[in-house]
Image 1 (cartoon, one colour):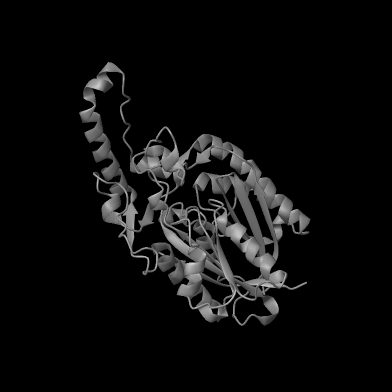
Image 2 (cartoon, rainbow, N blue to C red):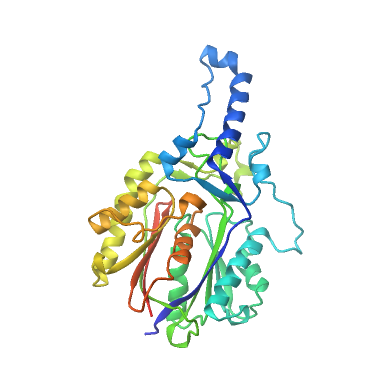
Length: 374
């Protein structure tokens, strides 16, 4: 059987960042204006008063200190509170291809490859910019790949893990020689910046991973994929009702219903045991003990969730190096989060060191990838 490796990773980080203080100032200014406009209804008890936010509340709830954003000015404009995205012609690269392409080129450079070597492209993300043509096929052309195929994939925050398994399987079966998994996450576009309970969660970023046969890899740093595992379980506790049939529905949906919504406490209670069991059983089935794993690169959604999952798997509190955190700077970048952690925290791996990557989120969906430094 063909041995498969991750041979390169790449990251695109937007130029602008929004601090908790800036975000709170924007939200509170909007909420104060709304409360004043609805003062009579609030006094009559027919409209609920909007609660205020605070930097302390955000950090305690999530561990997030800031987030990168594709358009800071539009997001912090209280009359808009969403990014301003320039409408592009069909002849221009789409925004997802532009930022995904930057991450892809870095990943290819780290793998010692060029776009011409790629024969399989997956764009795996929580949201896709359009229905068709596939963003992956556009990105394939954008990087100069003229062979093979590409397709889009959406498995919410677990998309990167699902994409890596698809790439590994294709390479292992001989259907691809050099696969590229790209996660362009413009989460600011599906986020409800006017919901106090979640207005702080998301940040924008793009990541990319190169997957190819270990025996023909030319990269200096290679991580052999020892195994992958996926799991899904239906839940409405994280949901986004935006879709192409919205315009045909007899009762128009509210604006907020077509954006990110979640029941945070239920998600925490149900996802932690699901992911913990997935990781522990995956390692056991590979004949590995948890003390053989040097690092867990987990989905970066919530600091408490990550720490509890790692604690359940390890049987003790994880150290900062065992379960590195990037969400304090990046916030939740959906599927890109675990790849950002992997990209930024792998340089100290020596030959033989083992790590575990995991993404999890809406669906529920969860995936794990176990790798060994070669």
